[in-house]
Length: 190
Image (cartoon, rainbow, N blue to C red):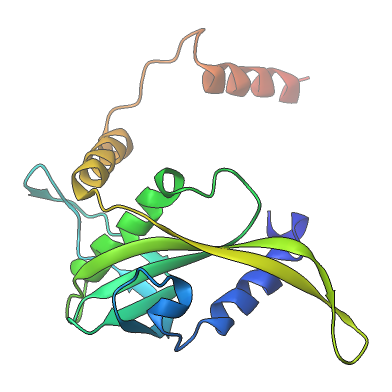
């Protein structure tokens, strides 16, 4: 997938680099006082507990930016360079909740209480000439807060783990995967 969008990675890297050590008010004036102090770090959760039972599953991921607020809590900022309508809180909420869960329930080290989550979206907005005669991309920026809903996230995790650890369903004519495998086997036997 990254090869299909060759500009996405350099633009995302530029966005993340631009906001290192930034004040939270630089992202959005409505955010609490704080500073982006960490970026691009791995987070790994303790084993997930589902319905009171500890599983073998953990959350592992890399956040884009982590702000530290004056009250000791942190804020997760996920950077996006896009013009897609799917860049909304509902679409990315599970990803941000996963980071929040791992930060609040780390496999090792001290937990960080997460008080805010949001998307920092850049949309390309034309080309701008620079002083040296070259051109650069212009962007519009907006910060989109994402509401925490750990109860919904835990329900999603429970459903996911039930599928992963559950019994395989019976094969049948209504199963597209089963039909694909049968047809593939028939073609390979020719």
